[in-house]
Image 1 (tube, one colour):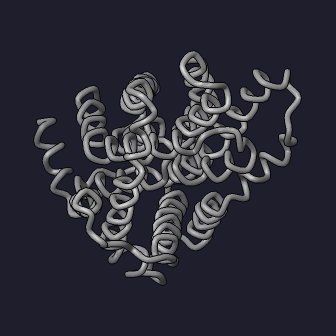
Image 2 (image 1 turned 120 degrees about the vertical axis):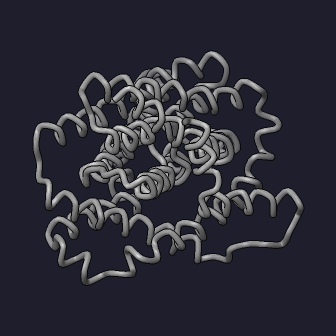
Length: 321
């Protein structure tokens, strides 16, 4: 059963386009997606999923299940970077430990979007509040990562005020767009879906395939940077998402989260940021090496999650339910 789910996911057109991007890099093809198209695709996907979440949330409303799920999402986004930092600081310097901890405590919106497409293919429903969970989980890890770096390097005397760090995290373009789209979806409800179809619905999978092609190209280029990082960080990039996913599955089982919501929450916990966190860390912790935390999340954890992780997490969640 699990092998069938994984195989079907591997044969998903969007995932196959990711492989095409990887292959193009390995054979030294001149294939590329010119700027600013990748930026547009990223904005499109965030806008579409935000609107969909808002529309769904306008139908379901706020209840105990929604609040429980959001509570788990926020709590784990604070906790994950803490234990990740203490694992890493024994093997890398404090700056890199904090940056990597922030990366793995935050989330990958594209992994989340790929998981929603996976659920749609299986005709499994999920709540619109999961989009809000994604938005809420993006920023706390940045604050925690920078706080831990400051505690262990400056005796708690930060170089940049936490208010400034928080502002930088919350005004990040992806956070503003996803929250704004969510609110617009809530306010407009079904009328919004009708007005913007097929832009936010019918062409979504094609846009996702195009975006994952670009991600494959980028991941293929970034993976070479890890050769000098040593085996520890490569193994870590594979093991920490599995551990975080196990924590998520246990929490979802304990609190009886339904299958669709559980998969998305687990995927958020297992994913790692390669857009929002690098942008913030580059500004707040310039001493950290982006040649470590960016390729770890983008070239190893991201492909692992979209190829093997998502269908495996779904199988386990479905089996437990």
